[in-house]
Image (tube, rainbow, N blue to C red; front, side, top):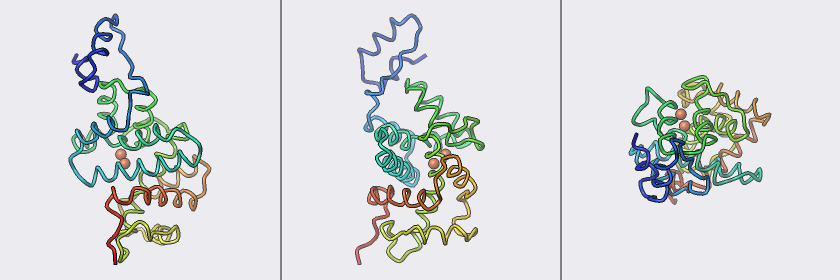
Length: 220
Ligand SMILES: [Fe+2]
Ligand SMILES: [Fe+2]
């Protein structure tokens, strides 16, 4: 096993403690799990710009909701950032590979479980249980609908997207046909949150990262 080297490849202290650990696998402390390191890992596994932007969008929404609810913004954001980590390189093993990769890097179990639960019923059998997991499950697809709604506006800006415009597009099944509306509804149901509020939070979260996701629009 390539254990020591995989501790983000830079911490000799952890390597030493791991090699003397009687076979027990060292866990990465949550404090060592910075956004910078998560981003490094995301870029390492995802070169595609659209996939990176999707990751930033989901991160932005997760952060927004965490802040609104008084939760751990950093944790919610990092999980949002890496939830599709394996998708570019291992699309046929989506979720399963993410689990493997994050385990190799000794990420905390809570983070791995949450990331994998977003694919519940599609590529994983891990049912979203915590609020964090349920939100991730619910907003993942919804970000796609918000992106497409922004792109058909003359401004091509997420700043102009409203709850009403997303709901109008929601009804048109041919619009953003790849977005699975049933998953979003299921997620909202699990959370006990109204669709308007979920859409509003998703738009707001994405507006906060408009530049990074390429949806700031063109100045008139
Ligand atoms: Fe996914
Ligand atoms: Fe996703």
